[in-house]
Amino acid sequence: MKLKVLIADKFPEKYIQELKDLDLEVIYEPKLGENDLPKAAEDVDILVVRSTVVNEETINNSKKLNLIIRAGSGVNNIAISAANKKGIYVANCPGMNAVAVAELTIGLMIALDRFIPDNVADFRNGIWNKDKYSKGKGLKGKTLGIIGVGNIGKEVAKRALAFEMNVYGKDISRIEGVQIKDFSEMDQLLPLCDIVTIHLPATPQTKGLFNKQMFSYMKNGAYLINTSRHDIIVEEDLLEAIKEKNLRVALDVFKGEPEGKSGEVKSPLQNNPNIYVTHHIGASTEQAQDAVAEETVRIIKHYVHSGVIDHWVNRAKVTDAKYQLVVKHYDKPGVLASVLDVIRQGNINIEEIENIIFEGGIAACCTMKLKLPATAEMLKQISENPNVISVSHVEI
Ligand SMILES: NC(=O)c1ccc[n+]([C@@H]2O[C@H](COP(=O)([O-])OP(=O)(O)OC[C@H]3O[C@@H](n4cnc5c(N)ncnc54)[C@H](O)[C@@H]3O)[C@@H](O)[C@H]2O)c1
Ligand SMILES: O=C(O)[C@H](O)COP(=O)(O)O
Image: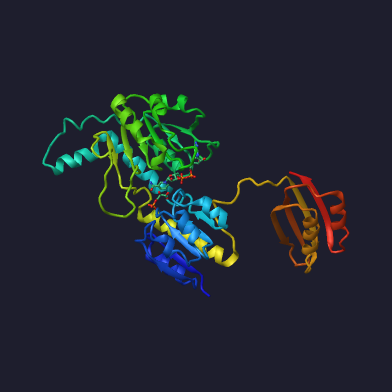
């Protein structure tokens, strides 16, 4: 039976055809919303989404779902904890839309500095105002703080350096791959920045990070750009900070973003002259959408042909494994079963296991990560199997 793939978001036609060529049953329903998915994904093996929400109900209701691919970067629209409980893989396409988001970020930076959207709006309303709009500060030599220096943050850094800006960064990991000054504390970094741009994932640690306190560290009149996720900013605190400090702000994401691709929108940010909002278009260039779709097809192809999930995001980062047992053995039926039987009798849980065959198919090596140590007696029993070549056991 063919594997069934549901694509529940906009996806380029060329790549849908590539999936069909893999002998998969492909269902393309780009208009499905969060509430349609529990029924629509009930019977599919692979689900591909962009920002469409895959909630707990969709996951719990699914009968065969094995892989959810976020055709994009942020996976916060997927109920990962529910997927974990059912052993459903979640993967994404990291870096594939990074350039597109970086380009939008630079665009927003210039738009803020030169009041481009207001220029256009006035012109469309028959108003000429060279005087009012001739107050750009210029970007050269200004200090940019990049919060979250991952795939997107790095692309922003490269472009800002080409603009001859001072570029500083803050990340939980060491910043590598771009030559920018790495700050560990926001209260040290934010007061230096003329422009702050946020490129963080939405996680429990980043939720509400930009609150009253963070805004208190920012310079009067600084620009703030957020193209990541709305939850990182406390919007009420932002509105206060705009009043108090005359911050100027550009957002590609905001609270209450409509689920559909078109329709009405209502937000308390709407009538504030210090705020520009774009329509969550960071990733929406033809180049980025092609790159994301190509990567999605590659992930599916690799999974179908080898069972390997690339960019698997819900694999446990740490397990309870404390010991490693490596058994080299002749690759014959029943050898591994006998080793596993010894471990079972010792009531030890195997957290991870991998069996690799040497060229020629005669010998193999099985590496097991164990929760508890194997006893000397167990190791002796395993070694005594004539088909076992060697045994090693270490604490990890
Ligand atoms: N507007 C759009 O269309 C659009 C497009 C793509 C991505 N995004 C959003 O941008 C986010 C970033 O995308 P990316 O591709 O650069 O992701 P990424 O994973 O490559 O980079 C995120 C960086 O944030 C860092 N980080 C995580 N938690 C942190 C914390 N608490 N403090 C400091 N640093 C932290 C990580 O170490 C990493 O370097 C995505 O998660 C997504 O939400 C938006
Ligand atoms: O995380 C992402 O990749 C972006 O938010 C893009 O979202 P989209 O695919 O819905 O445009």
